[in-house]
Image (cartoon, rainbow, N blue to C red):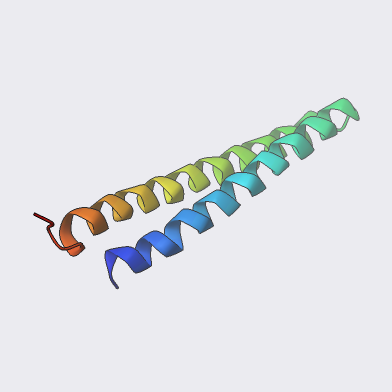
Length: 78
């Protein structure tokens, strides 16, 4: 798989995962506001942060692949 293909996979996937994690954080906060049991909103918030951080990692990998694509695969212009 080329660096460009990896970049085109990881960057949008990361952005979508960040969005899902952010939505889950809001959902966990609303559970707390609704006076749900602490174990429920705490577990939801923890899962939300895991998803959000996974999205940041995926997006970061996409940035790395973009840089590698530009450094290694693009022809040198003089």
